[in-house]
Image 1: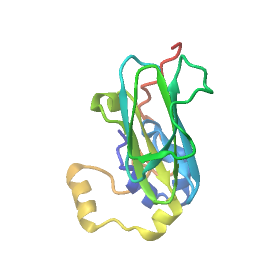
Image 2: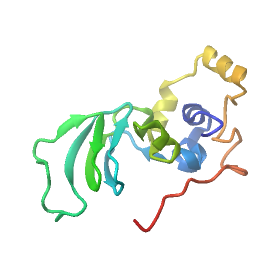
Image 3: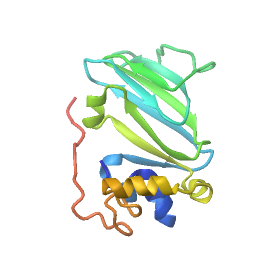
Image 4: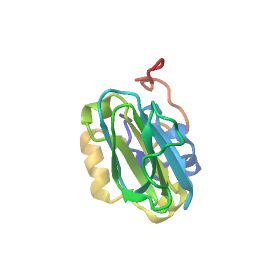
Length: 178
């Protein structure tokens, strides 16, 4: 976890809010411009199902299929994709989702099994950071709560200026060979 919440980082780092490094390694940040189309492919090489949930946006489920199957044989039609905020990807299957970055904010995309989030099955979409900066101010109570918990009220993920991320914890790292 970053020491500074990603929303605080976005609102206090100015133009650096567009640099993914400022949010820290563990946030897995993806910067999305306003109204940019985003496509995410989810490959479940595991023997368990994974319910992935997106905050702040609904997405279209465009493609589903088996990892062992010919990729041209899809399980759903792309002509009329379904719209969801959660999709369960069964074992040894994949899904492709799409959404438009039309809701400025810091949005988490994660597996709904919390222990999987701890293992790294989560990422952060930072949507339209400049619009977020221009239209958002943190309430004083937010800042007081951070002070009471010892959380810095500004700076990058480590509570520092710029891209100074010295001593940032690294890992978990993606497994390979599957």
